[in-house]
Length: 137
View 1 (tube, rainbow, N blue to C red):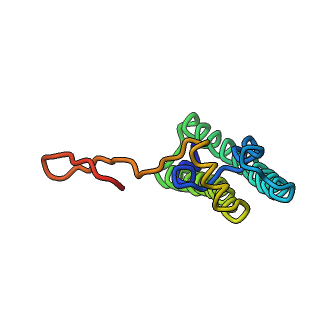
View 2: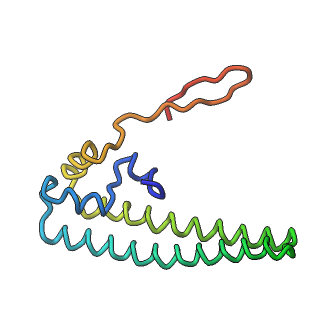
């Protein structure tokens, strides 16, 4: 659930999990094709971005190893890594978002308990002055 935790926890189904649960969800052949196409697209983009991320991490490591990294270079490299990480997460989240237009409302309702998504918002602790207060988000 890593990159798409926000989607999963808010009933935006995972293409991979939908394919695993296709019989329980009663997917039509057209839905299976649409989910598989979305998953394949996401996976292809994620692999490309993942390879770029690994390459940039290696470059950062090499710059530290060489001992010649300047603060400006560090800033530029880490900002590029952050942007790439954001693009990778967006690819995963977009696939979840797309599933809302593929599944019916009853299928989403069936999926959510199967995938372990929450039915109520989690409690979060907010620091307020001297006390920590649990609040529902």
